[in-house]
Image (tube, rainbow, N blue to C red):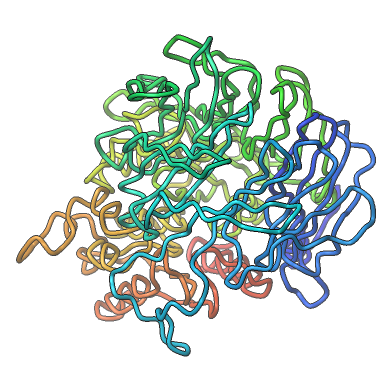
Length: 634
């Protein structure tokens, strides 16, 4: 194993290439994928690659000079379509240059090649000149600016607008596998706060453009997928389990007759102790379903004429971005486990998947910390899961060790048994290599344990999920792993909220890192780009119900700032719209008012995720230095 300095290791990880968007060809013989990396000028670039499903003959199709979006195969598997520079381009599998197939002012939002091989379905916003922009001033007047649906004839270059959808925003389209109509998912408008809360399904005839409305579907519906059972066609989709916006995702299904009303929207995963994450259409048989199963991931298929799923295979750790061949016999996925970073893997359903990409071989030369799966009981008896990382060469018998607890985002996220080097957390392996034990809990509200488990935090963030975390810390202290006098906590996004909540409710932590965390839920409902309704579903109120105090005040860490004694490092991107930077400034001002030791680091030009190379390196070194300062060098 290579011994690298912490600076060399930080640069190695930050500079590593990352695979994305695997897409297996319709004939199941090849896999296309994108590799994101940094060029010589430290600019993020994407390059398109294609390889045989056995991992051989991998080659790069684009030079990375332009951003490349998720690839889509032509139906004959002979060429690929990608979105780059705002337009759709077509590439052959030889060395010929990419050919632009759209030149639309304002660009293309999304596209889908249709079964005939001669048509693309396009979604695009109205072209510039509609009066909504004046110079560099954007004027919002409450009217929707939707993405509309168009058909592009690849032979003639002509486009046709589907007018029957009115001003509804087109979110997703998928064609029936036999070349029949499109299932089209629309929002009330393009604003996620309101539009995604009122989605509807439609059928669109490709030849005539005629629209048939199928009616409303559940909030946050996504991934509509066709399948056939006997003489009947179905459309299945993913949505948050109703009636609330906080909870586990479910698979819903409805029968779509040739004429007349559609059937009942059936929840095919009601009561399931896992969480569906992806739905993939295949031509022969029902869709494939990727499922978060605790610390692991499983592959299922819908069962025709029954309510439920049939298990096909599973992966230890994390798998996502599932793609399937036309007949559904072959798949590609991004998967990784333990200390093995995610790579593109491909093969037959139920068989062994072959690693197709190998974008980060240099990480295999590092001696990483050991990773252990944990199960423990909450105070009310509920079984919980998590991970424990120990420094390289250390074991439980070497305890008690300084322990840092990291909380994931979401709250509907999870820690899977995968390579734990996510830059924004701060990364668990980075801290383990510095000599710390690291605890990664999956408390109530997390993904992977079913709807009821996820819904437990609705209107009550910081409640049961907080006690779930402290129960795990107590277990590690009692077992001799963790030193009770050297505890730290940190997280990003919802994990940042939980770190702020932690130090506002106990002084047992000697240091905390609040990364892009919500500190005031009223402020979040006012300005967060997830929308007021979703944020209020977590916090309990909006703030406009009348004079307070409001329920959300009781779950806002800043309300308890006078209690905080723990030194706090606050990290935030200045251009963050998911959790606006005012959240960090508010906590900073409160801590300054009460004389609490703290530091505020803002990253200019960064959003909710920190992407700049220099900023990522700073984040790694700053978080480690903060914990070293207050917990003592591990």
